[in-house]
Image 1: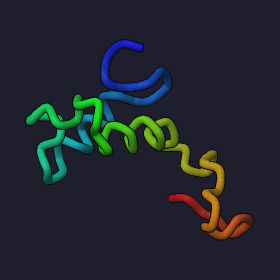
Image 2: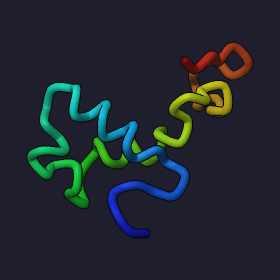
Image 3: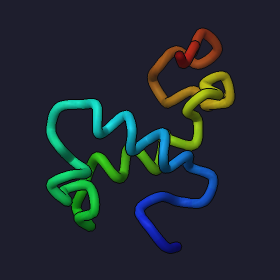
Image 4: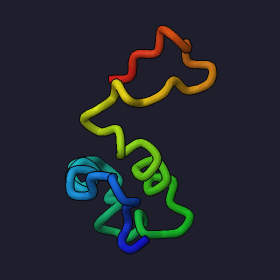
Length: 69
């Protein structure tokens, strides 16, 4: 893997979202830290950006009634 995102994760879209949010995760370099929870979340869920219906239900979140948005 090279860069900050796993293959299939829409990096430019994720970066735009983080740049528009408070916290300055990208600008400060916090996002690139091996301990970054923001990078973990972006890489774990970023693949589903724009296709939330493909996100499988998370344990304890309703199973069949799971409606990710």
